[in-house]
Image (cartoon, rainbow, N blue to C red; front, side, top):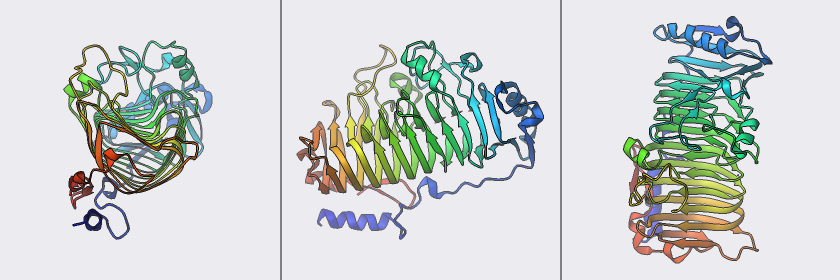
Length: 452
C-alpha cells in the first residue's frame, strides 16, 4: 500500500473531527475547586510598597493555612500592590490567588533566598558544583496546589542574578521563580511571570501538572533563562501560553548523566498545545540535553515559534544514557529562525568525571508534520552519534521558505528516517523508504504513541 495512503488512514484513525489528537493530557480537564477558607496577606502584616520585605508575612500566612489542609483547603489572597519577598514554601490544598495589579517581587538580596541541596537526579547544581538557591515560591511533596489569579504578576527582578552569573560572582546555582518537587495535582494559570533568575516554572518529580493561560517574559540578553521546564514529570499539560525568553521557551528534561540514570524517572505523557514560543539564544521548544531518565510520549500541537537560533531542538551527548522517543509535533508555524529543526548528539556538558562515556542515548520515533516555515536559514541539522544513530526520524507535509542567501538546507549524519511532501528536499538519510513502515508515530485511543 502506498505510504501516503497508510499515513492518511492512520491519521484519520488518530485525529478527531476537530483536527486535534484525541485523548491528550490537556483533554483531561482539571477543575478549580473553591476553597472554603480565605485570608489576605494583609492580615499577616504584609506591606505592598515594593520596599518592605514580606517574607515572614508569607511564611506565617502559609503556616496558618496548613491548619485547613484537612478542612477543604484554603486560599491566600494577594491584593494589588508590590509585595517584596524572599523564598517561601506553599502547602497542600492551597490556592495562591493574585489579584489584578498584585506583583510579587523577588528580593535582589541573595541572603533572602535559602540555600538547599541539589536535586538527586542532577547530583549537583546545574551551573556550579554543590548546593543551589531555593526558588522564590516552592512546593515540596504537595497535593492539590494552585497558583492563579486575575493576571497578577510574579517578577523575579532577575537582572542582578544575570549580572552575577555572567561575571562568575555566584557561589551557588541560580534560583527559579516557581518550583514544585515530588508534588501531584499542580495548577498554574492566569499569571504573568517576569525576569526569572533562571527558570520560571520547574515541576520536577511531579504528576498531573496543568499550566495554562500564562505569559512569561525575560529580555533577549538574559543568560540561560527558560520558561517552563517539565523535569522527570508525567501527565503534564501546557496550553494557551505565550513565552518569550532569553534561552529556551519550553525545555523538557529528566536528569543529568549518572545521576539521572540512577534516579530513573522519565518525563512522559506530556501534551503541549496552542502556545506562542520565542527564544533568543536557545530554542523555542527543546528536549534535553539533560535527559538521562528518558523523555517519551510527548504530543505537541498548534505551535507558533519565533526565535533567532532554533525552532525545535533535540539535544543529547555520549554519557547521557536515557532516550528521547515517541514525540509527535504537528501543526506549527516557524518564523525567523536560523535552523527550523535540530537534533544534536554532542550537546551539553557533564556534572563531573564519574559519568559513563559508554552510556549512549537513544533518539528514535520522532515525527514532525504539518509545519510551515518562513524566513528560515537552514531547514534541518541532524547530527547523530556514530555508536547510537538517531532512527525513525519522520517528516511529513513540511514547507519551509529558506533564505536565498543560505548555501544549503539540510545537514545530516548518523541519522535515518523517512520523509514525504517536504520542501526543501531533505538529505538522503531522511528519504529511506524502508523506514516508512515503522515511521509515523500515531496516537491510540488511550492517548499513547504507537507505531504504524
